[in-house]
Length: 495
Image 1 (cartoon, rainbow, N blue to C red):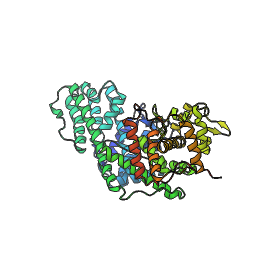
Image 2: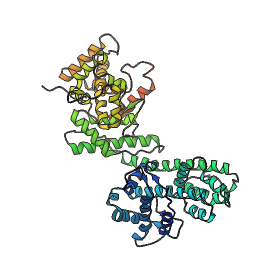
Image 3: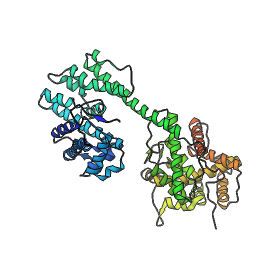
Image 4: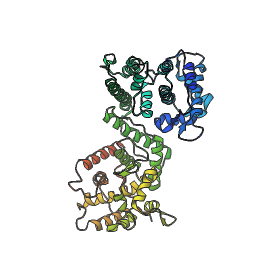
């Protein structure tokens, strides 16, 4: 976003008029803003509720009313320096943690919502065309999308273009000048060509259709341009050599290594998507909770990051949940049932052998069962990401033991002796008496990914492209991570 220009002699006049026109019912719901804009705008939310009310919006507009003077030059735009310095030094020091781009995004989104509401209030009230025109003049290329989006929200049955055309004394010429011209300018700014000729349209229904279509094209182009830049950066920042194994004994270095691995996977997904999607990942958040679980349970951080990346397709979304799985590692009720007390086939006993400390940490508090059902436990995995990772690690360890049984001994789930063998392998892995070759360890890890994404048994109907693709993607990720395949993710029990 470049410097923000206004259709006024200077932005002081622009924001002064917005303040004067603030009606009693005008307010901006914080949840209607993008995540980045909401973070910044919340600083103005003194009441601590869901909205910026009239008084809070007045303070918001007043800040930008005064900001143009702050750089010593009053002109028709706000510079990055003016915005940054005024908000940081004259409004709140809390703004210092946000980039100027984020502040400008907040500015455009909030004042555009105010402007859209003021335009609607004027159109719905006593008709004075000059006052309506004065408000429409505030629409420009930098805010047209945001104004249209807000107007559609507050007026679902009538578009802004239709409202203008229906206003006494106004017509399609007014629509072309104050809606179509800024929209075309925004389209050109994002690189679109072959743009609709609105001068040739004389039917409001056709015009509405073309406006809607162009808005979608612009939004798509904005995302593509952002990700094109990210794509280029991802290619430039891709490591020239494989990552090193993560050393959990050095916390600071380990967290930095986990960040590098997550960023590498995000970059891989951006390149794969070729600029079609946007990824905003909280590296600090994920690296710390992955480290916490990995360190406490002596479990490879690379494996945790691999599963989260594969399950989220590189998005690393917080508090994710749905019908197919819950939490960062997308655990299912069926998988949780495998280690929940009372599980059939002695799976709870097997889970105790594999990792009794982790199992008790998940299931019990002060000797009492934390959750009455597997479904209740699964729900917590969505609310608490770190807890969800713990549960995912427990399930992965159980699946790994099954993978050893399938790879080393060639047994299939449901076959004679399968479950006794699983219990035996769990005991022998924990005691250190079962030794796998390096080749077997690598095959077992890959097979675990296959099992983790579905049932233990590779049934023909279940094991098609979904599980196979999951296995391939996870294996590619673990290979990029620098993981030491000599490590077995089942701890040897120390006496």
